[in-house]
Image (cartoon, rainbow, N blue to C red; front, side, top):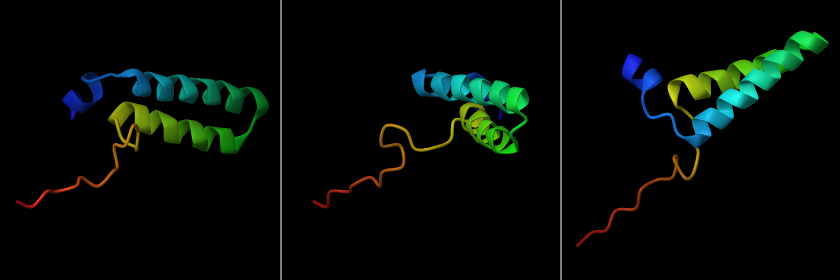
Length: 65
């Protein structure tokens, strides 16, 4: 579990973390609960490296020989 959180920090994970930080600030500043939920979503994706980025969720094609 710690390997997932601490390793393989690529650009998309940093972008998700920046979006989460921005949304957290907006949620606190404007007292908007929706911003908080969106921030939690992006923070979860950044922390656990989930989500579809750069065809990450594409179904692999298998070639039968």
